[in-house]
Length: 84
Image (cartoon, rainbow, N blue to C red; front, top):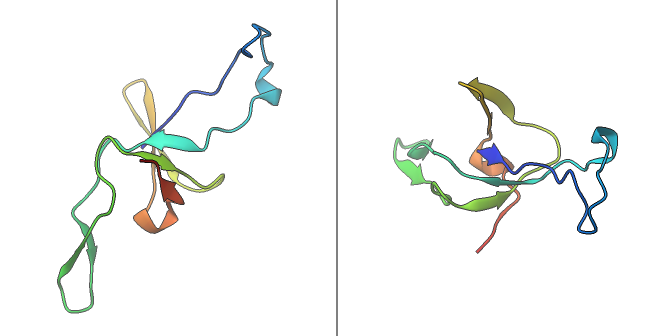
């Protein structure tokens, strides 16, 4: 998932210092796997797909850098919600 960039300027044009910027909890799903495995071996399909906008917990996830971009890996169970 790729988190949205934090707001660095207010709507009125005031620049925000880095310490006062809130952590962005929204992200876009970039890619996902086939799903989890049940005990009987069947695959439980994912409820999110690439392109979905999701709500993430404040903490957690594993940061991965590919080239100059930062991505965060989350399990589907850690995702708090999906926007329609």
